Image 1: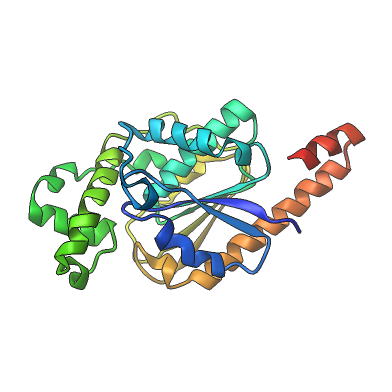
Image 2: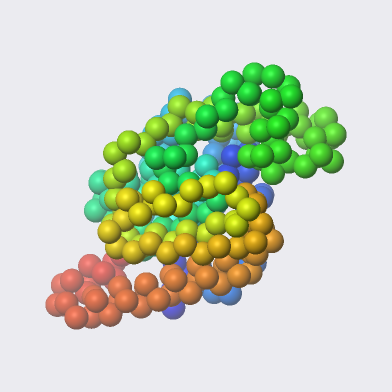
Length: 251
């Protein structure tokens, strides 16, 4: 099977370095493309857009060639929302939804607005937010140099999410597969409003950052879903005429 690009949208404060270790978890058939947000790593000097919608527009433009073909989306926490907004643009402008949308550690977009923006204004509140949403432990919080780097990044990401609100609940024309930690506080029920294709929820031991403890299992699940859906897509193309098959191959 050809490698299918999986667009990885990191959680608040994270970037390519955090998710690069996931590349070794896949056994084949997946080309992991990690989206790099502003203010970190190679984009350290790039300002954050004023809204999630504007960030999604930038990502859509950057990866337009990928989105014209067969691809999947995976987002964790904040990345789940950004991935959803990008997938909507792909549907609207290219008539090409993802092969499958994977969401992890995230409530549905309608429930994903960050509601603790005021806590970011105090040191104590920011530290608590870093623990909860940035996966930052006490040992890291004692590293003043690292906190000086990571705190503004997470703060900018969460302020961005503080201005996000989804009321339209636009459906994705693809299966949605959710992966959640049993001890996390997300609510998966409203995700049913975001697809008419299929919705599956898989639970794992752990809290908000459960995915790192189950990397091999989650990668295997994602790869299995992608392979199955790719084969179904090819079979559907084979049942159509030569012109349709050619268009399918071009995708």
